[in-house]
Length: 68
Image (cartoon, rainbow, N blue to C red):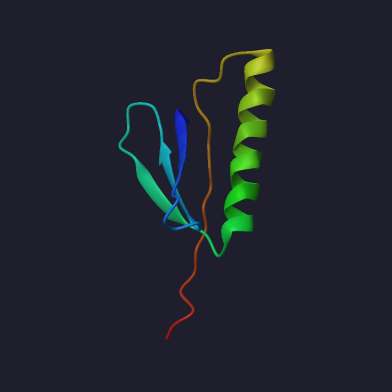
């Protein structure tokens, strides 16, 4: 993860820039969930950068369709 970009107009959106890939936009239920996610990503980056440089980071994102 190179950069986390928080939207100011839409508090529940987050752009994630990953090295050598295009920017992706994620939507969260609310601002609190977005902030929690950002903190977890930052903790992972800090934890791995303290020990060694990480070449790959796996991130699982799950969604489901509730229907209309």
